Length: 129
Image (cartoon, rainbow, N blue to C red):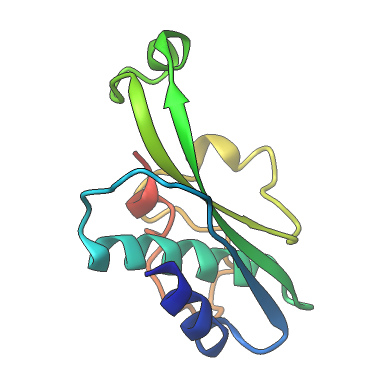
């Protein structure tokens, strides 16, 4: 799935943004809805694009991860165990610290008022676990 997205994303986000897909080795099996996973990665890529108006790079990596009791104590919605992690990062400007407490709120956006917007401010909320 990620390889196909890696080929499709440049058409969605523009040619001035490079897309690197770095697959992990010996990944565990994942039971997930591929359409939902594509939506999550595309939402993150669109947000990354908006943070890089002069161009840049988006990197999508996969790896295995073990979540222990310490992690579960901080994020009790996730049971401990072995997972496959998808990390999406970019070379953009980042998020203003004053906006961080709000980024997962419904309809929150940092886009300028009146500026053409494709979404409704739900991109990060839809990927939050």
